[in-house]
Amino acid sequence: MTNLAHNIVSPSNPTLDELRDAVGDAHKRQYGAVKVYAVKLCSELPEDWHEVEHTDLSEEAKPTLAEATKFRDVLRKAGHKNPSVVWTRVRAEGRAHAVGAPEKEKGGSNKRSIQLRFLEDIPALYKAGKREESLTTQQQLVMTHLASAITAMNLDLSQLTK
Picture 1 (cartoon, one colour):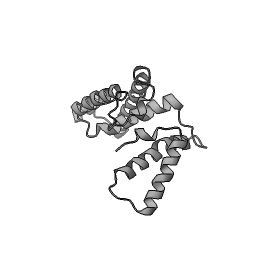
Picture 2 (picture 1 turned 180 degrees about the vertical axis):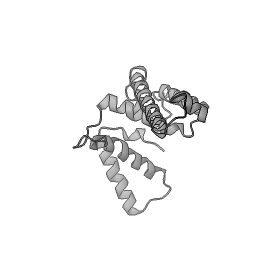
Picture 3 (picture 1 turned 60 degrees about the horizontal axis):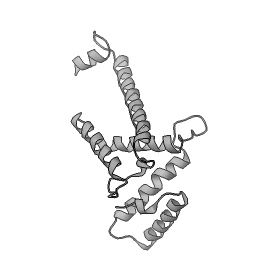
Picture 4 (picture 1 turned 120 degrees about the horizontal axis):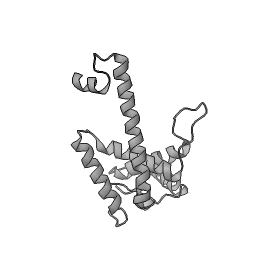
């Protein structure tokens, strides 16, 4: 590891500041690569590729699922422990590119806009509820409201399968 760190930062004994900066630079490069890749997918894959779930068996989903498999395979070969998390980031970047970047909150922080939170969180909650074998009456009512919210966002409820 020390030799790798020396190659990344300086030929001498690296300082803690240099090593911290090297990690920050690697993160920026990774973020940039994810964003560029997602934007390219927007021009190569079907228009709503970023909404395709891994369980989608439709013909329209096949190109996206094939690309997702190739992407995760590359990350696995590189030793990444959870490539699906990175694919989720790629999809989020693609969604942001297609529907607009999330708005920054007051104060200029990088918090997700309410629109992006709706687009990501409500469908995720709905899918989690659909995976449950049994729901209470209250949870069933919540599922009804989540379905209404998804429809109100002009998302296709039938695409949110198990």
